[in-house]
Image (cartoon, rainbow, N blue to C red):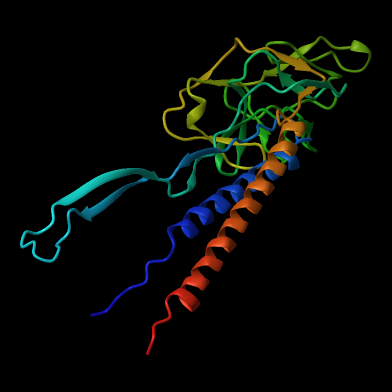
Length: 281
C-alpha cells in the first residue's frame, strides 16, 4: 500500500503571507516612484484571508477493551478554524484629488473641483483619459501630452494653436483663447475647448500606464462642463510619501516574519523525518 507524506500546512500559510508582503512592497515602490509625476493616482492593496479549514477531533470513545465486545462510539468534537494564509484581493486606484502646484507655464492646466473628471486625449490605442495636465505644443502647433498624445476638444478633434496669434489663455471652463497676436494687433480668437470627461463609476477605469486610463465595463463616460480648470498649475501626485515609507517598512517586516516561520517549520519537518521517523530494525 502506497503512503504519501503530507507536508506541513504551515509552510503554505507562511509562503502565502510572504507573497502578499512582496506584492505590497512592489505596490508601494510603484507609488513612491511616481510621487513627482503630475496627475498620478496611487494604487492601494486589498488583502483577504484565504479559505479557512474546520478542525475537528475525531476519536472512538470508549474504545474496544478486553472483554468488551461492543465497538466504540464515534465522537466528533469541533476544535475551531485553521487559517490557510492570505492573498491579494484587488489593487484599486485611489482617485483622491492631489494638491495643486503653480508652475507659471501657460499650457499647464489642472482640474480643480472634481476627482472623477479627466482630460480626453488621443493615443495610438484609441481615446484615453488622464489627470496629467502638463501639456506642450509640438512643431505643428498641436496641443499634446508629455508622451506626444493629442489633447482633444469638445468635438473630439486635436487642438491646434496658431504660432502667430499671441499668448494662450485657458479659461476656467477649458476654453482656449489666443489674444490677438503681437501687441494685440488682431482680435482675440477662440481656438477650442478642452474636452473634459466625467465618469459615473471610477471602478470601471483601467490604468494603462504612463498616467492614462481606459474604459473597462460600464464606466459611464459623459462630457461635462461642470468641472473647472486652472491655467498655469498642475495637479501633483496623490501618493503620500510618509505613509508609503511606513507601509514599505511594514511589508519588509511582514516578509521577514513569514520567512522565519517558513524556516522554523522546515527545521521541524527535517527533525521529524531524520529523528522521530526512525524505526528499529
